[in-house]
Image 1 (cartoon, rainbow, N blue to C red):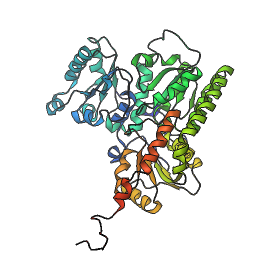
Image 2: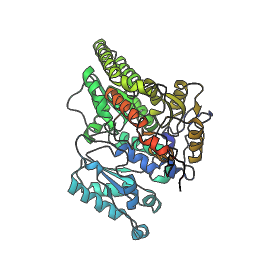
Image 3: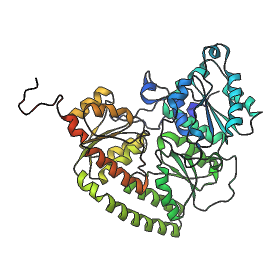
Image 4: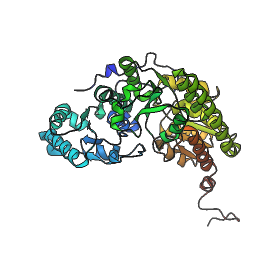
Amino acid sequence: MFVNLSKLNLREACPLTDKGAPKLCMKALPGEGAERSCAFDGARVVLMPVTDAAHVVHGPIACAGNSWDNRGARSSGAQLYRRGLTTDLMEMDVVYGGEKKLVQAIIEIAAKHRPKAVFVYATCVSALIGDDLEAACREAQKQVPVPVIPVNAPGFLGDKNIGNRVAGEVLFRQVIGTAEPETTHPFAINFIGEYNIAGDLWGITPSLEAIGVKLQSCISGDARFDDLRTAHRAKLNILVCSKSLTNLVKQMEKKYDIPYIEGSFYGIHDTSNTLRAIAQAFGDAGLIARAEAHIRQKEAETRALIAPYKEGLAGKRAVLFTGGVKTWSMVTTLKELGIEVLAGGTQNSTPEDFLRMKALMDPKAQIIEDTSAAGFLTLIKEKKPDLIVAGGKTKYLAHKTRTPFLDINHGRSLPYAGYAGMITFAKAVARTVFSPVWEKMRQPFPPIPAGGDIR
């Protein structure tokens, strides 16, 4: 019924013993789901950005509500992916089963919304009561003209990363390779693990177009279902977030002979390096020349535009706590603005990402070991940073200590990828650090009058 977890590369070959290193495990630890989200949510992260598909949650309404539109993925076309659809399992469904209800829901959704496909997600409740998701999808498929795809990643399966990789397995087995593109391109690529958070993808595509590279499909930011079906005709895969879909690129390399490289589009340095690596992977002299010319032009333009912000931010100090590719890429990006990273840490990264972060940070910088609320408060008190760059869960700890905070994860509303994204990032950092609100928050309350009498 479920994907064989042993085939998803969940355990790394050489787990790290370094202090603060991410611990990748097959099963979630008690309480971990509340802190890091569950496998169901991880599957939704990967598949929800498929914009023209319907996404049906087979479970209680809270599972759909709590995961609805919580990743900030943007679409340039269809908005169906943002519609919350659920079977809303109740007590009677738990007793008598919810398969018939699910079949009817799929048929109704397909008729009303006319999606390109229907993804159906298992949850803890539907899995525990024994509902056969595959059987229900097969039954509904008889009356539905579009693919009905079961996603068996109930929350108890493990943490978010396991759900990411289960979703990658679903795409590999049931979507990729099921259609052929009308035309092929000699420099066609796929992005793997790019979710178009706040429109990040749209900051990258102008550079691809400028050097003559075609984006065959993006898995799965701003994705169209039909584009995903033709992803096997790309000539190169770019693994943007290695934490989430490593299993997918490895299987595509094995089955379709598509090589892959890792890259990041955060910051000037990493954007240029990734564009250069793409061109060199194809080995075409004309493509390499176009890429180098584009890189020189955009680097000069971008550095000129961020210079005023860099001048003001030079010497500022930050604490960095994030995951995935941003674990190491943000170290370089902050350095490009003259900001020193005092401490860095991660929970959701591969050991390779963690080691890259350590190599890029100053040897004197602290690796965050205690990621609890108390640990963070102690760290902030000791380091007294000018800025905290992290995900939304850290925001309130930063606000408690009156420390400027910038959300770098999925909760943000501004795109930071590509050369244009670097300019946006510089503006956002400067606006955050120099906001007058922080000085006002640090003043005693009630205000002490000039005479010192507060009666």
